[in-house]
Image 1 (tube, rainbow, N blue to C red):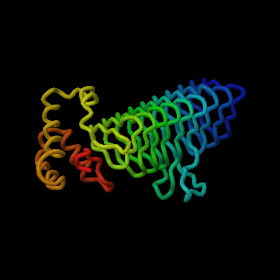
Image 2 (cartoon, rainbow, N blue to C red; image 1 turned 45 degrees about the vertical axis):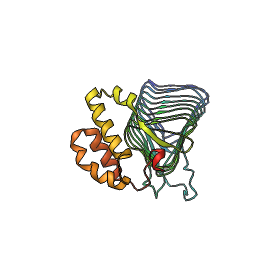
Image 3 (cartoon, one colour; image 1 turned 90 degrees about the vertical axis):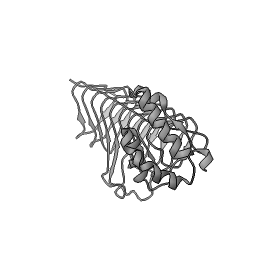
Length: 263
């Protein structure tokens, strides 16, 4: 049985899952769907066509499903979908999508979104991500699984960040970041591989050595980057992570985040 504080405002049409708790002064719109066993601590706003998966914990002053910050938006019934097991801390915001962007903002399972973090319209965010305080996504970003974005960092619209990337604090990320990358700096540059994240993914010493060797050849070998990329393509069979990196690069439309030496 759900538990709703008498000061909360739950509109007709909202769907509240079994065991969900809605604390004081929450506002739940008519098109909101909350899964089972969620906990809205208090003063949470869930509006728009927004669905929240099971077991999410949402702190005060979070606003989920607000209108996209896009001048083209005219009130269309676009959506926000949030997976299960997410923790959304104080003042975090996530917007619904836009028609031109496909009409959907999606957040995966198990994410941890610290205070004042923001997911812009039409973003696709993977599972088990961590957004530190005030980490911000512009519209249409694609964020892979297990990405960490440091505090006060901002990701430019349409930018892709591959899985298992670590973004340092106070970074402006303007370019696509390869899977397993480590980026840092005021205007983010590629500083290496996220070895900690790779070890947590149970990479063996041999696999780490293989991927690091590939990384050195791709970004620090002789010739232009385009020449090195072409030469590196046959290495895709040496490790799935190498294949993943090469596939990611091949699908890019924005510039690639490179080491400072390449800038």
